Image (tube, rainbow, N blue to C red; front, side, top):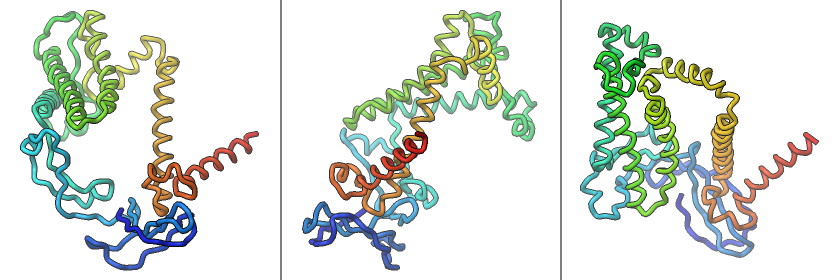
Length: 310
């Protein structure tokens, strides 16, 4: 959003007016224009906002991003381009991509793991592509049999599974390291890396730590869509039904609860972008702003629900 300061003696509250059919700076028609001011007689702002419903896709010079170390620019690959389809959902620019040594290892080992899994599935249907597509949801690369314990089994009896698991483990861990190192390089917090580590912890517990403690690689999770769901069901029955587990219940509550809160917040800010609500941090402490309007909406909505229930 662009804005230009201008003096005004209009009301303190923001309002909107539909912009005319004039072309934007980079082509296309504009969205809505708005004017806002902190108090009567104070400096106000005229501008034009864009959101997902009124957007104008700008395709100018590509943005190359930050380069704190002075080396990242040389390590970025791919010619920057723009996608109109992607621009409907977010940033339309595609590339350049920075992988680094951690990204290259993660990509290479991840592709190897997927190829091993896919080729083994294809061999199970006698190399028939139509059958592979038809039975894809039921195909699986299974872990070794229980008699092998923690030993390396033959390739056709779980050996390929162990090799694929090794490459997958390396891929996931190096991608986590890439996330951590990039955050450190750009002087960011490590929140994304540690959130990713929580998911990796479950992956390691089910696929590495628990099988080792139980003394058999057969306890690992099979690679397949329906087979891994069947494994989850058997695991649940074996340990007394996961749905009765309070920690499982809490994880579901926080998962869906956080999604609901993010959706409520995002939809509210989107609803008040016509009043400049996307500048949330600038407005959060002032009266008569889009942020106050959004807060009042939920305050009155929740108060109404509480009074109805009473």
